[in-house]
Image (cartoon, rainbow, N blue to C red; front, side, top):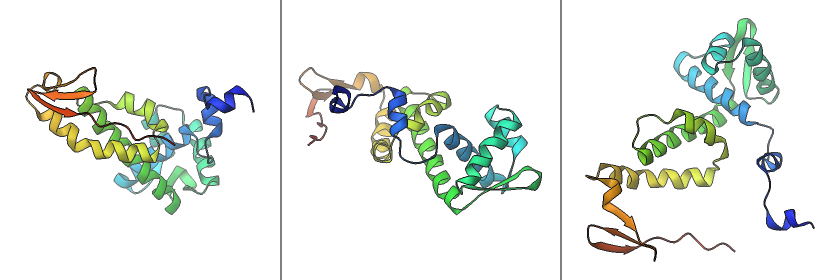
Length: 177
């Protein structure tokens, strides 16, 4: 076993190569948009998909063909696309992941839109992390609603969190085995 295998460190491409499953990040983007549009309009046209993703219709057609081969969409004559049951199952997860991350980053950054950040990072968030981020949302909403969230909470070098004179021990991450 070489040092790289022992340490677990890889380049981004190395981690991508280890990814289980045939769905790439680009396929996720397409399926997410297909499901978003299909929820609204029932079907999606290749031209509309290309327009929404700022790509050429030929690129959309190629990607939709790959999604069809994997069983995620039905692609009918005249460019009509419909998600299959498997497509809806994955697509609903992708849409929920997007909404959760959008909410999370807007709360953390105090903004109303974090689309660019979400689109860049969403592919690297696993289901466990997504569930943990979702669980943090009520706390972040409370924090953001406080009069001055950045000044109200502070962490000391000892790992204590203080708020206007109150002190509580900061939660520690679980130990890994």
